[in-house]
Length: 255
Ligand SMILES: [Zn+2]
Image (cartoon, rainbow, N blue to C red; front, side):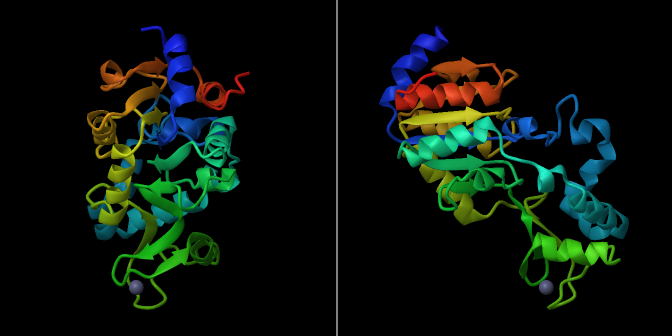
């Protein structure tokens, strides 16, 4: 497969691109992934309990650790990088129709991606939600209570356990969000998977939906993925370099 030639043929003709991003696009912004060599769970396997709904509900100590981890999360100080910016460029040119992300860091929106374009299938760490009554609160308001000494701040409405508005292990995805992602995968002419190992559902299955509905598939990821064989082109290079190049090809401004 000659990736450069394939891409030069595919990108300029792609009129309706759906992008799927994973942790790999945010590592250049200083946000570690979970399972990579420097990953959060690789370095501290017990941290995974904070992302498992059963442990979170059952163990106040897990919740206290989770609140501290939310407060100290590198995303609060992180800046979007050239990869995020390239997707904004594609969207503003009317070529990118949907941006599905597995990331909870909100960096796509910070970079300028439209709120209606971004589909956060794993939720967002920028809001907190009450697991009892569903009350949603901006996360900084709850973290201010943590800073003020509440180590596991309960819901101000009902006293229930609160959590970041993210999907933990053991929690179902939001059906309307999942439906939007599937529609975006089925209706695009090019599906671009970036910085995701494509091993977690439903993200992985979205590639298949796209291909089965006639889209071309381009994968940008440091490691092999189970979908590489299905792809029209696979790029291994750094995402912060690969995405601006792809956007340049698509927009005829190749650098
Ligand atoms: Zn509540």
